[in-house]
Length: 276
Image (cartoon, rainbow, N blue to C red; front, side, top):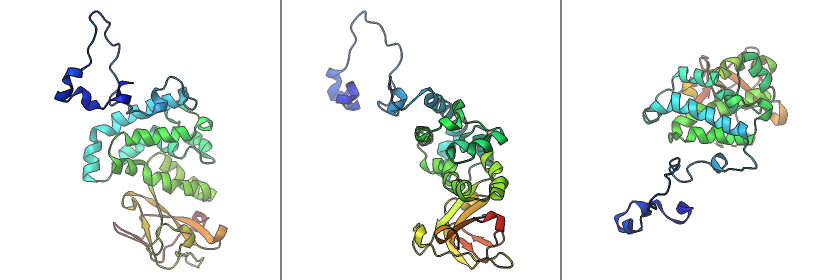
């Protein structure tokens, strides 16, 4: 209640010292220190009663926070400042902890995939119980690091690159790439923006044509995080639903010209079973 009506400076600035809060002689000491900073936690975390948060949400948060504080926070500021490649070992640890699976937990077939791989969600949350508030907690806990570039690097590319594979990929494609991605052994990026219209996917110009050698014409795509990834999912204009299709290509492919700014699809070859 105090901080709802006063600025924190009231307790620290010299001119306010005569207003400092005292304690009556003989009164009991506070059992636990106050949470600092005031209102620094999401309301669902500290409210006694919440219509949205259950014990599963709290155990999910506790598990995430423990992992992040133990495995990421000690080097977070340094990694964010240097902008260096995130160690693959950290990616594997996130896979083992079920954090990567949590980022795509609501997608169709994820429970079956995770069961086959022996992956469980943080805090013992069941896939059928996972909801948007777990997603909110996942975002909050990574942003607590205060290193937004690093936080996006840890989950951002995976969170937008893998869902198209799960939603539109063929069974063969999913069976081939999903295990390594969920275990954190490989990384994926999404290439969908173009110089012509940015991320206006409805007006995408990149086109794919079925040919004898599986190649397509040269086009330029912008992607996020591709220099650290093993796979890239990209969209193109074809004969699929509403004229748009997607495919996946290993970043090691000789048909991809890659620099820090763009991916060039120069007669890019994509296997037919990886196209949807």
